[in-house]
Image 1 (cartoon, rainbow, N blue to C red):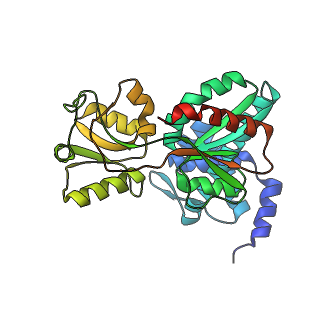
Image 2 (cartoon, rainbow, N blue to C red; image 1 turned 180 degrees about the vertical axis):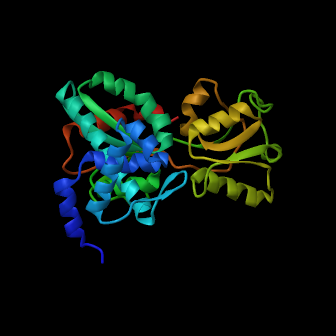
Image 3 (tube, rainbow, N blue to C red; image 1 turned 120 degrees about the vertical axis):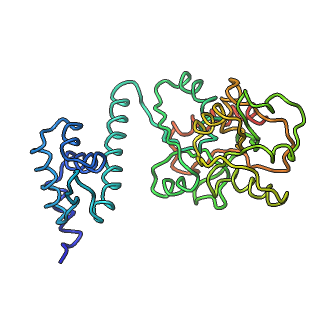
Length: 314
């Protein structure tokens, strides 16, 4: 019979240490107590003892031993991500404490979709940091689906994203930067620099796709369905702009991407926008901000964003 949650929680509060969580995460990462011990800087017997101690506190087995090392049990698989988040929280706590004990007097916690990181924050943040050197800006890149959860738990001060279908209670949304879907390629591609490329020509090219249900993927599926075509595909799917950059640089392929997501790469000539008319509309990027209990640092940051917005409209 399993112990009640209150008993396990009491045990952890009294006896658990950060080292317990570190051992749990590292053993899972390396699949070996010996390699985990070396990575942490402990002896193998000490690591084994710490892990056994944690299993006793939790009243469950976390790993199964096998010939080549260890693998997580079903319980372990569920607990490892929680332990990893707890360690990440400790790192964040240390970062904020160090900054505010030094030069920082305030903190702004920002979450942003990748297009906002590349196409808005990369442009604005250097100037904000220079104007407000005493403000620590913590930035976390997330998909739009995960931003709402952080807002709900009070873990974010500002979000940069496209307008959500439902705006959280006590928050408002202001548009900052226009955006559009473009067809991008590497500078070595035969269509780079050509004027007035047609969609019919593009359907003969090899494409790399974003994952479903991303906006570019949905738009691509709609375009090809309406045209009744099935273009050749490169079977790599990613939300990461740097992966698209690497693929488009290395091969003669094309991709449908948000302009703001590859804004920097286009400006530096690492990628090229193909000159084609797309019958597509796309939502701009904006700032999702609280309307009550707003810190002075958050107000300064949002004001700075909104002052810069006019030059981000094009």
